[in-house]
Image (tube, rainbow, N blue to C red):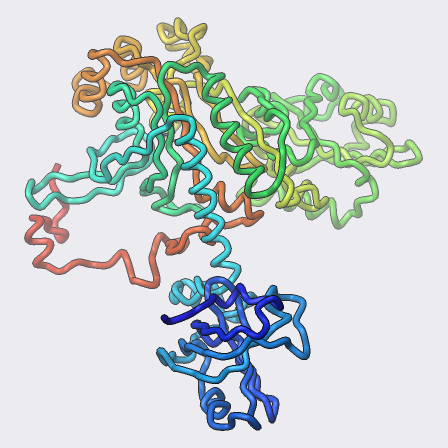
Length: 587
Ligand code: ASP
């Protein structure tokens, strides 16, 4: 038997026992007569003690061990003379009588400690060593617990976990596909799934009624910060349900996770429409850990010869409570913030509502004290508050003010990562206009149903932008952690939708024919949703990056620097696949 116990479980109640432990040498300390080793495994750290006086040979052997050697130690559990309250095994140590080196180790390129001295790149290159560190390991453990909770919860509700294929047909809608050449069908390609969307809908046609899958998805997108080309979804679909059933079911799942993992109980999640979200927060994924709602003051500010406001479609601001004391420097840096290319605003107007009731603003030339007071009233500002105002075309200005709102929330410490504000955003627009290609795209995906009361608008191209979808997102702390919709189960409506999206009958048949055919054989009304599992984990842990919750993630350039992928393949492999990468492949 390699070990009797793990390095995390021995306590004072074990004193006197003879034990054998295995693990990695995290650290050793020679104190003249004694040598101590911190032995680490997945479960914790136990101190091993070697006494020079009673067993000098063994002690000398221990002194020769290097960091990260894999060792096996047998001995007696004794009480420690100097206890360590920081670790659960800190009251005991093992007085070693037998020591085996199971494997030697090169000195690791960074310290395997909670606070490592290794930079990001180095730790990514040696990810298998980084995973030995307790904080990283705990993330992976939490991910496992979440996955188990999800499986049990959904299984108890009669959901079946069903695997869907990884090699599928490429579809043009949505993100770019990763493609896989087929050797047996030269010139033809599979795609890796962006999501199991069509398969899960087919499973509903098959009568499976409640499906879920914790499933890898692939999207070949330009990598923005904290995106992974492969990521995991908790993908779900249900038959014979309305939106309310779906929201209840998955709110239940989210609450269950919060309860089990964080010990938090929630009231029913807030629900707001997409329009409200845009109007009040300038975002379809508002961070509701703090208020600071938008105040529209377009009518209130016009007619004071201030061209900028007079010529703007929208004038809108936020109130930063108690910030009237902001210095010139602080205000300038906020102006710089909104002018950064990432935000892209022309500038920022401020009004300080001083505690003595006077005003100081960047528009004093145009607005007297009474007018400023009126603006303060419109914005519901109080003495001591700072009003920050932006103007321009509605949508653009809202997005810009959203960035400022989040920045102010950050500066004022209102975005505590260990506080959670979940909500549903409902009634998304069905279609989204793209200026570049001059056409409408499905905001969610082409299988999402319009709200029944808006269905007729599909017949009027001028109103397409107004059609609301039966679609919903679950948002936590300003992140979209999940989203889904009621599906179109009627073939005629689906065809109409394809036409709206600019597909000819032939194109629709070529791309989605199997789904359309399936719908002619009795498709039940169905709906579903998918959670981004990596993101959900990171939010639960109060962490920024999803990378920390993926055992072997890619870096920001989509590379796995540990294995060195992507990488060229041998000419022989290319030949076999009939791929000539020196020649552009002809259409
Ligand atoms: N397949 C969708 C997505 O990946 C989710 C859904 O509609 O169920 O975003």
